[in-house]
Amino acid sequence: MSDVRGYSYALVKSIQAADPDKIGVQLADFCLHHDIPVATVARAFEVTRQTVYSWFTGKFQPKAPHVAQIAEFMAAWPKPQA
Image 1 (cartoon, rainbow, N blue to C red):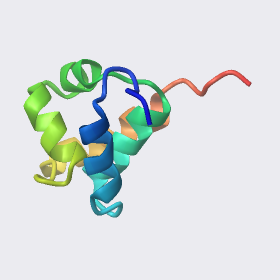
Image 2 (cartoon, rainbow, N blue to C red):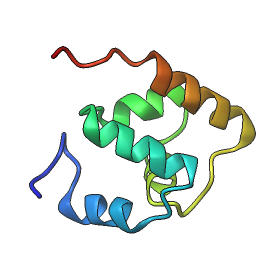
Image 3 (tube, one colour):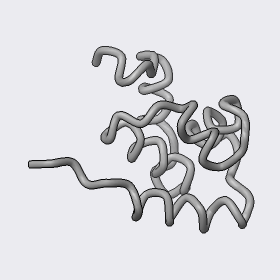
Image 4 (cartoon, rainbow, N blue to C red):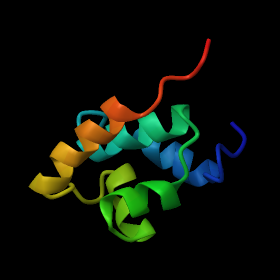
């Protein structure tokens, strides 16, 4: 797999190996499939890019307020045109 919107091959592999039941990993998969850069996610949740990477790989779980925001973020993202 080549880089996806600036995501390194190593990060993509880490995301694929992470627990898919974790909301941060689900967010990572969503961002990969919608070409959303980490910087955009970090700005949306007012966290650092490193925090986002930790969520993406399942290293850390988002705090409760962010969990609700993540669900809203994914639901509100424009759907790709067919």
